[in-house]
Amino acid sequence: DTEVTQTPKHLVMGMTNKKSLKCEQHMGHRAMYWYKQKAKKPPELMFVYSYEKLSINESVPSRFSPECPNSSLLNLHLHALQPEDSALYLCASSQGTGRSYGYTFGSGTRLTVV
Amino acid sequence: QQQVKQSPQSLIVQKGGISIINCAYENTAFDYFPWYQQFPGKGPALLIAIRPDVSEKKEGRFTISFNKSAKQFSLHIMDSQPGDSATYFCAANNNAGNMLTFGGGTRLMVKP
Image (cartoon, rainbow over all chains, first blue to last red; front, top):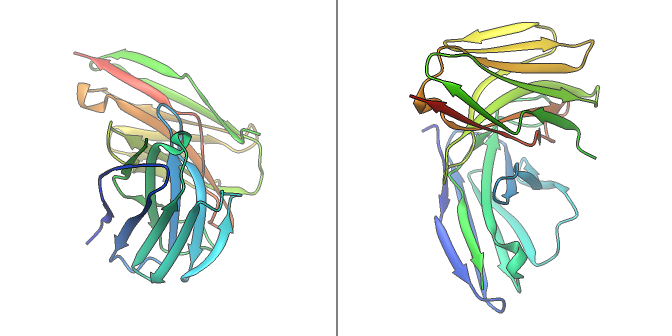
């Protein structure tokens, strides 16, 4: 299995809703990432998990809450989002940190906040 | 601060031609330089990558050229095909491997 699987593929939520994005990989990768991508822009790093511990938070607002239940799963909990948070949310994984490896990206969740 | 600068923003190439995309970086802590291809509605897919101890790497029709002293690297797509039409991102990662930074992207269109 060489894929990163993200669910759901599309999500529409109101500003008062609580929802979660899920990401799963079975490549034995020990680093996992959340990126946010706006239209016609490059992905922007949000969070880095290394060996199931949060190692980097790129000053992301607290309405985004990451969680890593185990080495294969990564969640992003969403609460009280704003319309400007509408974007493609990408999960990625790599063999680990401490040395540079290629990242494998999922297809993303297209989030629309209404 | 944009740490990886990419040009051009868009590129139109005839089928069979060579597509060239350039990137420049500033942070000397970067030690891994991948290129990603992204189709609409999909996540970026790793195309090819290079480390700074090598000046060129070729995989099929894709070649990375790397100039460490100039802090520049480029992607060459030989015999470009309509199926290559996508957005290409250069990127750089630091020697801790946890800060993959993307260039601004190049939208490539290959005309039949």
